[in-house]
Length: 160
Image (tube, rainbow, N blue to C red; front, side, top):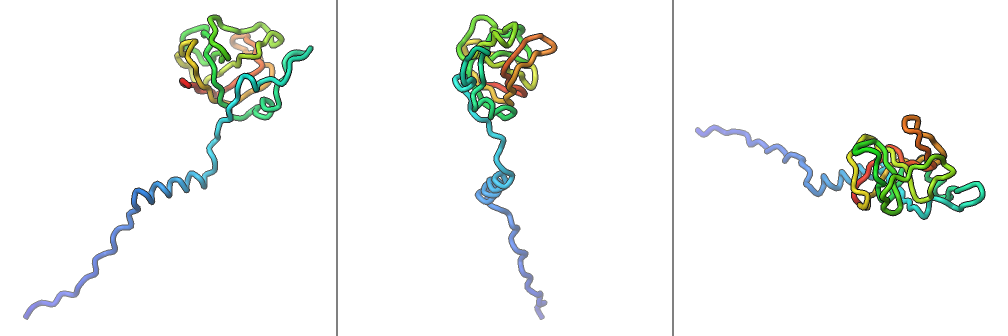
């Protein structure tokens, strides 16, 4: 007599999401996490509102962006040494480093860039983009004695 075995149900297929479902889930997760800290573009022309008897005044946009993440494009002024954690971003390529003795002499077409780590620099004629946090107001670097009115700190840069 044949042995009767009860039929077993096959287990349900594993609930493996498709590639499309994984990508959709990842996108929803990013949206739920909130927007990334996006950098606002800032140009040299937007830095200052006017030049008066008391010197340069910051534009409303510059004041509003103080403490926020910004992106600027420009040229790296020739650094004082081959590798450092700061440089000067200029509106046009420069042959000499444009550091000034006081903020009264501060040109309106440069911004000090304080990097998040020491790096080797780019050629002075290469257009770069810098992102970091904008600091507004006069500040003297205790190590170098350089004075600046505007700084982008915690910065990173790359070719534009």
